[in-house]
Length: 135
Image 1 (tube, rainbow, N blue to C red):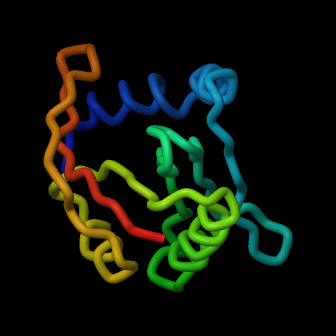
Image 2 (cartoon, rainbow, N blue to C red):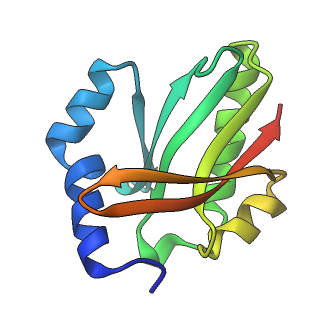
């Protein structure tokens, strides 16, 4: 209910399709699967040192039945460890202003540093908070 069905379909093709993920990997993004008992339950996409000194959390998704059970918290904890090993100073992300995940990110130590409206093409925009967590 945050964005229209049309925008969801557009964004899935533009950012989540196999070809979009292949392009992102070619641009330096890395993807990680979250697994429970051998089954994939979610994934995240990151770009380290983008911009310099920061880790960009581009995507973090969990299957619906695994949300609210601490898996995202565990994934963020692993990112903190990764950022520390890479000697990066923070993790940042963008999240729709109306997304209930904003509160979850705050509980994990992220703060809103600014807002951004980005034209993503197709007549759509992303109206996001930019959130950051020091590591």
